[in-house]
Image (cartoon, rainbow, N blue to C red):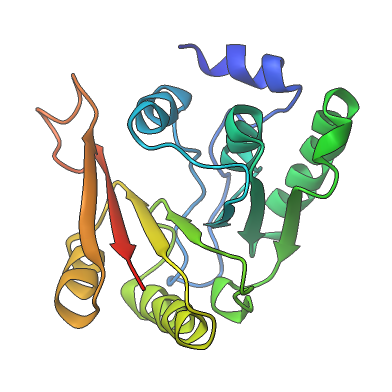
Length: 202
């Protein structure tokens, strides 16, 4: 599954990592989740068109467009880097040329992840190790507060999960591990090459 193939199929440009560094050490550099990894994830973990996914540290929006392409679900991308955010918005314009029905299904916000207000409809949250644990914990607390107010089942999806993220979810919250998706050929040499999906049911 070639990276360029899907970018061309979706009429977007997401190949390439972030140049330069973020001003805050709390935020890690942008690197898109490989399409081959996403393909494996969504063979084992299906979304519904009624799901609302939030991608924290969305970069140029690859996950957003790929999810909409597969499931027609609503996806919100949160990106603090203004340059990457502008590239995501440009990708959105190009994607919409071929997918006019996606106009209200894909949106991007340029803000710090912890400043994003969780919408009562948001029920799937994606993290590719985008920031340090204190930021992650703030967001998890906001998700928990939202669920307390608007009861619903929510999933947290981790790619390349840090031990600290795992520890927090498994020892400080009521999230339970639902699914693990290992990337064959990579996981054997690096146990971070996997997805972990945690679920909080109400």
